[in-house]
Image (cartoon, rainbow, N blue to C red):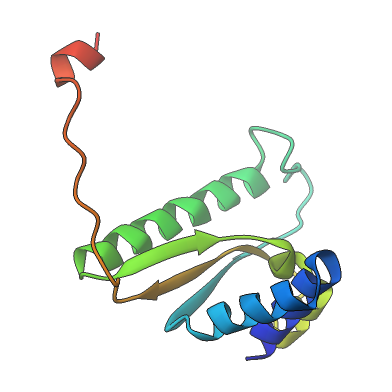
Length: 133
């Protein structure tokens, strides 16, 4: 609930009290949450996220792949998911609420639960022969 209240206050600061209350109500209804983090190990030569060949960037990409696999696995089990990032994930108070270590950063928050409806699979528009060369 503390994360929900923090997010509500961040939204209220930008968009007004009514928007903050609406966001609080919505977030409190989310049945399941997973906050995904990545741990950094600062070693000489690790590089930065701006360096395409850096270990830090590779670790972030690996976490993103793990999140996608988690979402696919939950979907296979009949659950809906939403991967979200927003101002709340990067607020210093969020770090304190969830107990993030100094050497960790947030990759995203995954909401999950039983979907109200499952959208129909869109019809294929092209065959593989028309897409791949």
